[in-house]
Length: 144
Image (cartoon, rainbow, N blue to C red; front, top):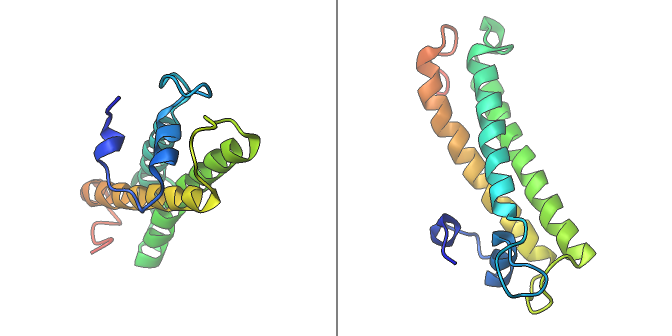
């Protein structure tokens, strides 16, 4: 089963973890399990959109928050949310044994997966902020 996640850049976590994250069930026969990739993707989109809209049009849309430092905190905040979710979800499956026993991965693979997700979140929120800055009155010059 091929998906968009097969073509995306990964920070070196194992192909076995990749198969588990795509939804390989506990019997190792089919991809009918819960896709962790889909869950993380939805949280990445939702948190990035929510945080950037809040920065450019919501609570942080005030002259007192027009600094690159505040903007960077927003970007890293969204990435931290995605990192935490990816790490917690993949580690909980590993610790509970909720995966196909033919797969071999460990906690370092889960951390690399979480870092990969955080990088994608950082990239998404950065690109989103470049679009949204033109809709803002106070933050037209943030990030540059």
